[in-house]
Image 1 (cartoon, one colour):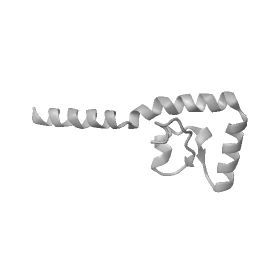
Image 2: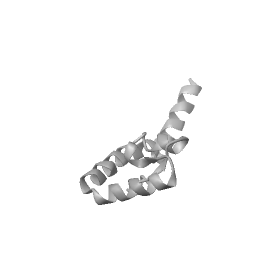
Image 3: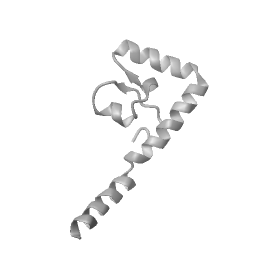
Image 4: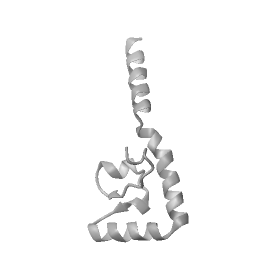
Length: 81
């Protein structure tokens, strides 16, 4: 939802959230100190920030409610055949 809203989401390197950000290195961190460093670095670099936001926008469509509903409908239709 945050990506859909246009936010850059910084997440721990391990676990499910890393998949949601597509393994984007500029959004992954290993510990709190590294998270702060990455956030500060991205905030200070407008071209990198814009590129990261564009990548996030492309990924966010994969997690939209519309895409989820379409996948469920497809699965139901395929199961009915």
